[in-house]
Length: 284
Image 1 (tube, rainbow, N blue to C red):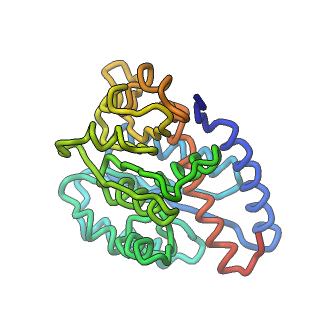
Image 2 (tube, rainbow, N blue to C red):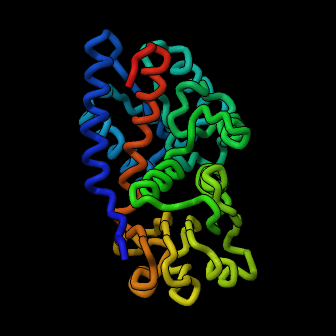
C-alpha cells in the first residue's frame, strides 16, 4: 500500500515556484494577489492566512481585504471590480462561503477570468469540458497531481467520483475522463454506491461526510483519493474515508490530513505564475 503524503511533493514544487517568481521579479514583473473575505467566518479567515503565508514564502505580494458581514451583492461586486481594473493585481481569490445575502453566481460571473485564482467563473468549467482549459479548480488539479506522482494509470480504468460540486467533483471527473478513464459521477444520494465503488479501480470522494467510504465498498488494489474535510467539536479534521479499515486494501490512498489539502495552496499560485509567464512570454 502506498500512502500518498504530499509533504515532499509540496516542498519540491514550492522551491521550483519560488525560483519562477524570482525570475519574474528579476524581469520587472512583481506578482501580486488579493484575497476578498466577507464577514467573520473563522475557517475562511484561517484558510486566507494559510494562503498569504504561502504567497509570502514564494515571493508573491498579497493583500487581504475584509468586508463587513452585511455587505450586499452590489457592494461586493463593486469592490471586486476595483481589483479587476487594478493592473498591479494579477490574482483575485474570494473566500467561500459568502454570506447568504450575497448572490454567488453574480459574484462568480463578475470576476476577471484571467485573475480568477480559484476558477469560480463558470466559463472556466465550460472551457475544461470543451478541452480548452483556461484555469482548473485547484482541488481537482491537486488530486490529479498526486495521482500522477504515483503513476496512476487512467486509460481503460474505471473511476468513481463521489461528489458533484462544480469546483471539485465535476471538474475532477472530467480530468480523469480526459486521461482515458471511464468515469461514473456519483453523490451522497446515489442508491447503489457500494456496487459502483467496488467495481472501481480509482475512487475519489468529496462529500464532507466522515468515514463515508468503508472497507466493504473498496476492492483490493484500488486507488483511493480522499478530498473530504470535516472538523469535529475538538477541531480535529476527518476525511470522507474510513482510513484505518480502507487503507490496507488499497494500492494507494491519500490520508487526511496530509494528502490533497496541502497541495491546493500550491496550485492556487502555480496557476497564477503559469499565466503570468504566458502573458509575459517567459519560458518555463
